[in-house]
Amino acid sequence: MKNIADYLDSTYLKTPEQSGLSHEETKKAIFALCDEASEKNLYAVMIRPEFVREAKAYLAKKNPAVKVGTVIGFHEGTSSAEEKFAEAEKAIADGADDLDFVINYEAYKKGELALVKDEFLSCTDLGIRNAKTVKWIIEIAALSDEQIGDLTRHISKWAAENFSENDQKNIFVKSSTGFYQTENGKPNGATVEGIKIMKANAGNLPIKAAGGVRTPEEVRAMIDLGVTRIGTSSAAALLGTGDAANGNY
Image (cartoon, rainbow, N blue to C red; front, side):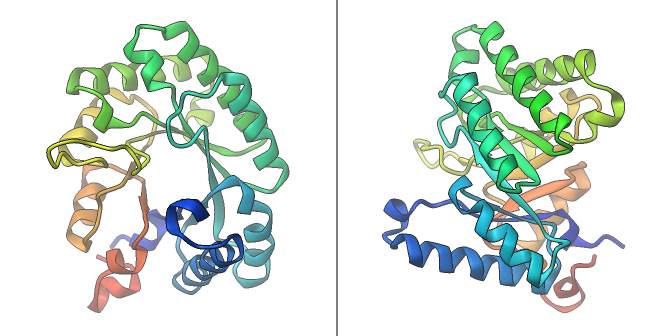
């Protein structure tokens, strides 16, 4: 029997401008997210960097077992390696446990592999040296199936060449930001097909599915595909009802 709560990163990543809330109202929403994660023993909350310090302090009193994750280079991924490194350093100083970087997939699509590799190596090394979990968002909705496989394969290769097998357990490939704008109703988050391609090319690296996983049935399907973390803005709904409401299936 699997405990679904152990897989869930409960997310609130809207800026005050995107949500129409004030900074203080946004902070209250994040504390409510922390309350739910604490009560349901979810694995982590995933929030914007500016709220990490307060969320970490809040959870230290409520349920210190709940991790605090944040996003870096969000959501376009086009900031420089140096900017991402500095943003991650600040998040580490503020107490973040997980660092979810948006890889520069636009540079990858232009063939600028050296740039993408440089940001992967420098930022992953920073996270691993500080005993953090590092996840690389490849934004599958912006890529073809061939590109999903190729970019995942590159990340796996770089990780295998530069980090130990033990370190690789804490280097994820992640599907999506959930903020990418698609056309013609195309999904902008994790799909079964996309996750299968990632899994087939990730080698030793674990997979995080994010965006588009909205029902208990979908979360179970993702877990059965081999995903070990799932990002969601509706964690309570994913836990389902009955026995599943206790996080089991």
